[in-house]
Image (cartoon, rainbow, N blue to C red; front, top):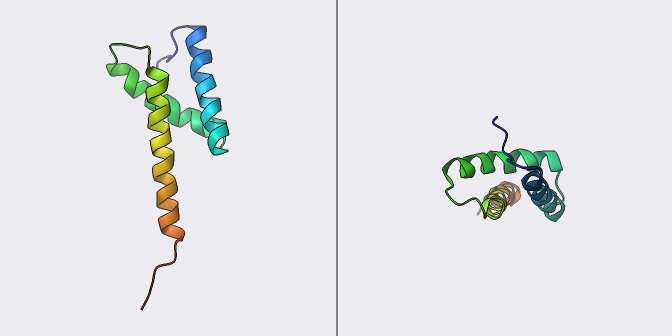
Length: 82
């Protein structure tokens, strides 16, 4: 993987975002970091303006986690059998 962070300040910003998401969902920070950095890599490759990369990556990771949560709920919800 190419180094995603151009500066130490940028790295701190993104690591802070990773910590925020992990705390919000009470999940392992390394798992969130993997999701986040995969998202960031894709977003950054096509970005012309880089000011909002963390916002976009946070949004994408939140969507992934919410989608996974809904899938788990559907799998554990008992189905009605007449």
